[in-house]
Amino acid sequence: MQYQSQAVAKPYFIAAIGLFVGQILFGLIMGLQYVMGDFLFPAIPFNVARMVHTNLLIVWLLFGFMGAAYYIIPEESERELFSPKLALLMFWIFLVAGAATIVGYLMVPYAALAKYTFNDLWPTMGREFLEQPLPTKLGIVVVALAMLFNITMTVLKGRKTSISIVLLMGLWGLAVFFLFSFYNPSNLVLDKYFWWWTVHLWVEGVWELILGALLAFVLIKVTGVDREIIEKWLYLIIAMTLITGIVGMGHHYFWIGTPEYWQWFGSVFSALEPIPFFMMTVFAFNMVNRRRREHPNKAATLWALGTGVMSFLGAGVWGFLHTLAPVNFYTHGTQITAAHGHMAFYGAYVMVVLTIISYAMPMMRGRAANSEKSQVLEMWSFWLMTVSIVFITLFLTAAGILQVWLQRVSTSPLGFMAAQDQITLFYWMREFTGLVFLTGLVLYIISFFVGGESKEAA
Image (cartoon, rainbow, N blue to C red; front, side, top):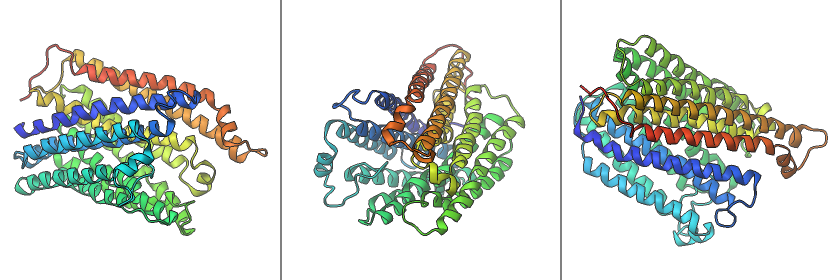
């Protein structure tokens, strides 16, 4: 059954995809700047392009998570959203704040931006991934709290399910751990220590709860497998996620001035972190194999299966490759880290947001699925983006291994820039595959505008 207030999710999804395109464009600009250092300089220096690239990633995923929550919660709670008007108001506040921040990065020198946005009153800027000015950070808090109030009230007044409870836990955790972005101690070790409470406990903690809830919801819809079976899997996955993810934060504490015991805690628990991702892969394939019906939205099913596989490879396998302290001693801060980051974010979070958009957008237009022609195009986009991110990861991994050897292991180690000159070929290959990725993303967008016969939603 469809609820009228689920339509609130549509602008969130559209904004998410628009910002995703922006993120990829700035990624391509950065890729060229790796091999052509003066490309677009001084209009867009590398540090600004990187800031925009990573901030757009965070903001568009947040739009995607919020849209998913506004779509899923009414259906799971079997009642209309508590306040659709509040959800739409928060959408415009978030969009305007996000756009103004990006314009600020591009048009104003960062030090001047800090001065104009009252950073001297409460210094929070200048930290990786948390570069947002104080007003933007406060805006994110307001938007998050309004969303949590909205969906929590909906859940409290309606049916409670495991999916809605896990999703709420993830979203509340997202909001709570973001508050550590306001804590900026003058001691650099303390600063980095608590900085990870946002950065790690988001992407390797509470965001994984959101991932599990979204994946479980879509699998229930496209397979018809009993909710009870899927919910048991969901609880197992989130238990392992929290057990490994919280203490696994120690793999970020290896070399920042923390006690030596973190090398043991970080290594042991990080080595266990691939387990919940492997369980997620088995879960997705198991549910599809046990399906009781053939859902017409084959593209959404493909995205759901891809999420399990790619999150296991990116977050699990590539994370494990360099998470043990004796290995990380040589690899931290190299292109191996970038390889892991690209595939992990794509596999775990980009793909699950594209999964829910692929499932929900046709439903909000009164269809169970887009036309067959549209789905073929969308599945082409799946393979273009997924295969290209695999090659991006492989090229960056090769670059990282060579970088480690030339810069850190060799009997006559090279300086940083000299080592970078030796791995330029991999950067060119990464740039080419980035263009293929952009092509896949454009096809994903086009697929929603392709006509033809489509099965109407019940």
